[in-house]
Image 1 (cartoon, rainbow, N blue to C red):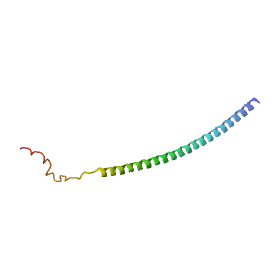
Image 2 (image 1 turned 180 degrees about the horizontal axis):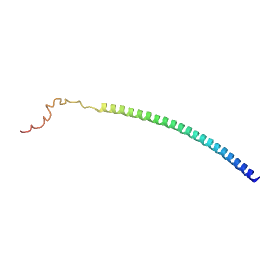
Image 3 (image 1 turned 60 degrees about the vertical axis):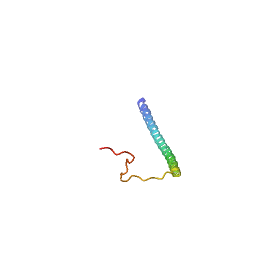
Image 4 (image 1 turned 45 degrees about the horizontal axis):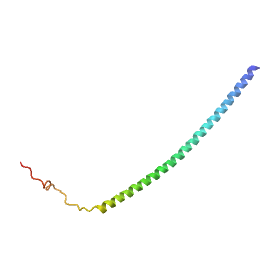
Length: 99
């Protein structure tokens, strides 16, 4: 009589452990799914922040380039002179080497 009782307790304990294990696995799977959802949501927010930052930076670069162009045009008072195209007048300010 003692042996069937021991077997019954062992079976009950095994069944309880299996049920607990299944519940634990379900909870772990649900936790992992929720964590994945959080990661996805955070990645979307981060992506939007990076996109907004890139747009702001691009606007600032374009504005800076426009300001630089205006500054150069406003302060460029030099008139370009003739450039030596053929090279005939290169070193015209120096003596010819003696041979």
